[in-house]
Image 1 (cartoon, rainbow, N blue to C red):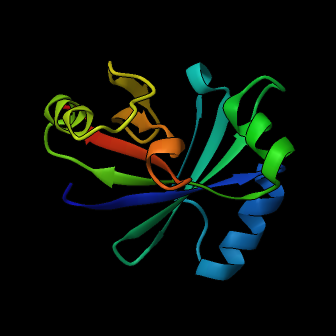
Image 2: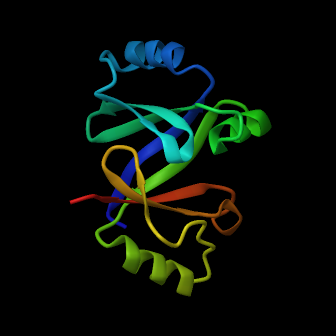
Length: 133
């Protein structure tokens, strides 16, 4: 893992949350998009070299809707940038981590993504990200 790629925050209302984070960072999101496969709308904010991803559920069965129902709004995941997502998945599985999706899938911000189960990472959902080239 090379660096923290972004921190994902689950929100109930993306438009309202965008206003809060625009005030916080002094700038609007640099990117907004929908990820239909995950049932989310996202906004990305930059703060220096760091990124924050806001995630709003688009349907009541999406992972974000279930997270908010169970835990409320807040930090949902920490994403790490990796050079070779398939090699990293193999390495982490050999170390005993539980991978939620062994095959990388297309995520937001032009990334391949894989998630590690929070039960194997001290309660934190970990996302591995690799730039799609």
